[in-house]
Length: 231
Image 1 (cartoon, rainbow, N blue to C red):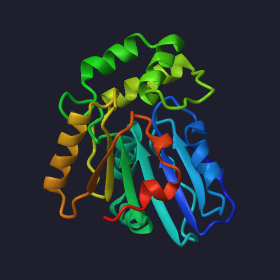
Image 2: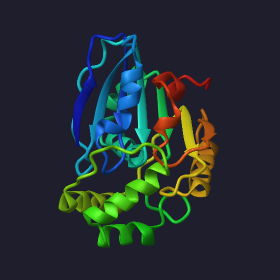
Image 3: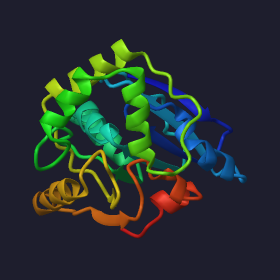
Image 4: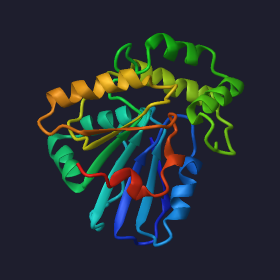
């Protein structure tokens, strides 16, 4: 697990992104550029082989938002579960909203995530060329990052760890986005997963659908479009 500040200009609000697998922060460039008023500082979290790193102190911000995308949803839930109960309470309390985008806390699951047979095939056949095909499926015709080069060995190992990891549940999500044209996480599986979550949760999440592929971010022109829906 690693993090980097994509934007740090003493804004009053901060967005923490638990990103998806394989892609750099370039996915979010247009959202950073459109924040002309410097409303948000942005912290980018990636690499989920180990989930034991502490985030920097965010207590000085007036508003704090957590966005988890794709495998970042399960990574955040597991990262949170690794904390003590007191630390979990502090984390829950400091964020104003938790937003899950095109991901599940059961990331490898026949009915609630990516079917295991597909995940295993992705691992077994991973090459630079297969990753570029995967990227095309993720973006579904929307603008793609210019840099798609990966460390195949490292990224394969990360997928193997995700496959082997025991799923954790975090009853913290406020808003869930599900893309209707997602070719990575089947939308029916995500609907099933989040409906089941809401049945167990005392404070259900608002589930929103968007006409977009797995990497949906190009359809939003600002961070507010993602986090500011009424819940």
